[in-house]
Image: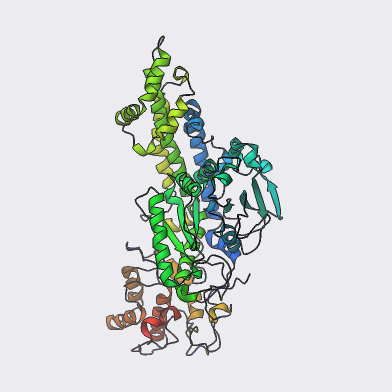
Length: 602
């Protein structure tokens, strides 16, 4: 598919409001200013393709090393303090979650896609990858009849589910518990892809509505969904703008996502097939349906658009769809950077559940008589389980959300003998508390924080240098999808001077000043007022001159300098200090950044 970048105006991110320290002296004004740059401009943005999505998400080898180090420490914590308690109190039996293996800590971020049949799940994956993949099935009828895991590999092939579940380097061994009936409907799709080097995508069967179709699956669909959801970093629910009904099976699958609401994102797909008024009604109806289905006080984030490579059928909402797609791609692109945080978060949730289970089992064990009446006492404890939960919660100051589902837990207890349960180990509980109070906070200190100095923040993030060319997340779209005509920013050599809409006389300078701008420690891409002021004061110009330069450079009047405004300020400073020119009353149009001309040029 055509994957050229398109001309677009990106929404301005919210600047960081904390004061940043000046991280170094401003370099002498370079001799780069020309009277009238003619016939040349720096490359504006690099042409993007679907394969570049992973490159935008990947922050380099150092970031990968940091994630690997955190994963290694999490594995050590799990084996030392958590795993013994899981075995002692049968965590895998009560929560139907197998014990973790090392490969699950080392795995790449996973994105789980769900939705009813023919909502565009497989087309969405193809859109992100920018190409077809082995085993792909697309059609208006229920075509994807299996769970498909898309992984990176040197050659294109499909891998049967039974082989995939025992692969030593993939985190799918836990799926063996669902039996051959499921594994025969589970497969891997391997292909070389820069996107899949950063994330793993999981396509699911279309959710059905008929009772007969559901019972013929041969496995428990909701339990499989729950298994994947527990390990996924992002869960995407897709809905078709032309059919918003939420079937019983889809509701059951959404219920299985309980406890993972922070991972859920919704997509209202095929929204270009309806007009603006219909879209407003459909969007409201979807939110109403989700509110009835998802037991959460917050409304799930819903992205609206047409998520495939074809041009929009209705361009009334093209700007909205473009902005929504950019936000969604941002969510996907940052997954590798957030992988370490997600691993810590998931282990903490698991530790809290293990700790609660230990107190419950310990309490039940302590209530059992030593000799006679064990069966009768066991039945009484099971029937009185709500009071047992309340007693344990108050005694040990536990959160209600850490307790298992009482009905499922009761059914599990009926198959056990309480006399064979393990007694509470105070030492093991103390070890878990030490993990939560000491080990995990030490790990969190390795992650970026707003309290970090610019030097420390940069070291932690190990991020690529800020540049105008990489600031925007590349989108896997064609240049004409949103109805834009091809502009100067589709040319890697920049816009010509006669292309008034896209030409910027300072583009060459902007590229050279990237390192100077980054050295000043911008927060969220912006220099705060104090830092920008200090930079200008060090030029030695008078207060009146600096006031005039500030008014011309701070184009959007927010008191902050982004990279483009910084370039304009340095242009004006250079014009005065090196060429002795007066400061103009207004900026020439060619000096104003194209993205900000609408603020000044009428």
